[in-house]
Length: 126
Image 1 (tube, rainbow, N blue to C red):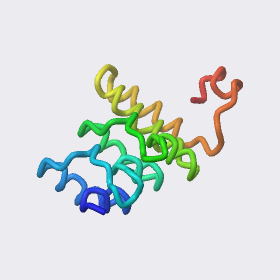
Image 2 (cartoon, one colour; image 1 turned 60 degrees about the vertical axis):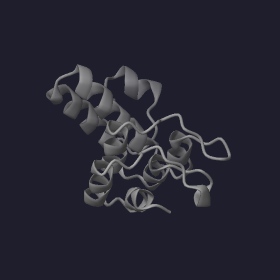
Image 3 (cartoon, one colour; image 1 turned 45 degrees about the horizontal axis):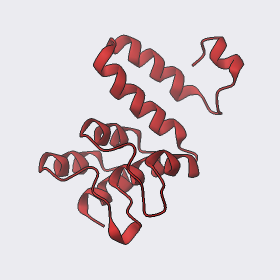
Image 4 (cartoon, rainbow, N blue to C red; image 1 turned 180 degrees about the horizontal axis):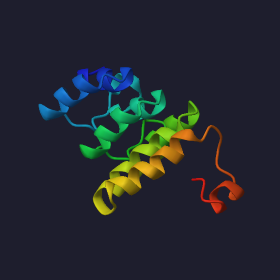
């Protein structure tokens, strides 16, 4: 496991940013771990900030492991689906919306403890 993979899997944001600043590839697959990238590991472990930083650094959201799994699959497998929703939302909204709007939506996402229902979405709770 590379140092970048290790930082992503343990949620060590400071070390992750250090390695990315050195130019390490955020989409580099690890052959010892079935082709998982740092993003696969971060999503699966639920590290929102690390996931966000990896996406900002250009990590490929569609990259697949040797078994065809994307980072979203890893997040879902471990019950961390909101990690990837949160990180992708911040990434997209930081490019096109105000910070105030992004934070309001993220606050709603982070307070959800179960999958949203049609009623929850229709009521504007997420």
